[in-house]
Length: 176
Image 1 (cartoon, rainbow, N blue to C red):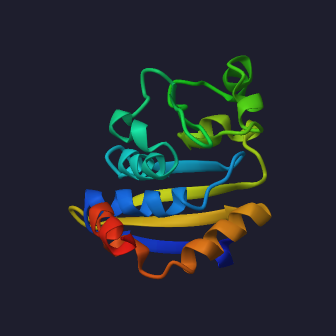
Image 2: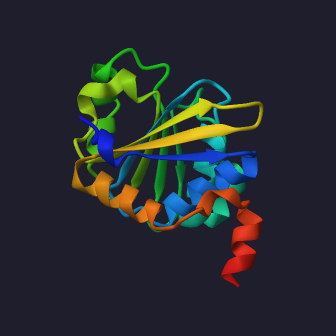
């Protein structure tokens, strides 16, 4: 059960800001972290993943695409990033047959779209991220922590202040 009182909501106004939000989270992720991504098609999940990959596997950033037809895209980095799209899976049984359950407890960072399809195999320790339209280019991104690791990630994100109102390129300029 997510810790609803600990949730964090951010608003982004462009693809670049959504990517910057993913980058900020990516900087906090560690081997074994699991992040679920839910929301409508076109809601910003792939832009967000591109930001996470930019921080963990920068050489693969331009390769990020929705893995709808592949189920899994893997991006080598430290740690590696496994990006799942579970839309085509019928149930948690399919995930188990594919070996996904073992990968969720491995040393990679796992990003999972359509997590409701494999709810029975999701670990208790995870971060749930919900993407909702709040205008033509605006997105409302809500982070729901599950377990102590999820709570720590949300607290760290809260500590970054207004991190997601800048584009990724603006953020890199301010880091220089």
